[in-house]
Image (cartoon, rainbow, N blue to C red):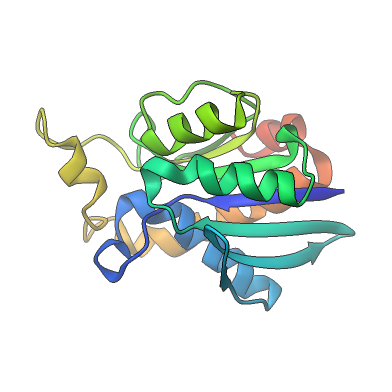
Length: 186
């Protein structure tokens, strides 16, 4: 079984610890746990890992968020991975900070990274790990909010939430979406 694990984010130090880059942070934690490191390859930082007999291909697109679909589409075809075995790790404004939910498919919900993937992969039927970042921003300041760092009171919780995200990914690749959702989605 092969899986493409996609951490969404933006490249560059100015974006490193922003809410929009939580996908990169989770992918980095997963790579670290597996003892592998990323290389800059075509359209993405790329690495491979194994987990309980599954082959995991981890990418962090270098296309910037709004063009993430280019990287996902390229690696999906290059590695011959079916759309249902692509797991996208994404920040989600509609979920409160501290909540992480796995969904087997769904709409982009206005997220430009997901819109790009949906458009280029030609499907909404790919699983996503939605990392709640909350929506505590003034009207019209959404972009500033997602491109800002986590608040001081959120930062102590981040490592535990990132570890939980990695556990959910490991669960997804071993027992599938339904059982992972039952066990982790609260």
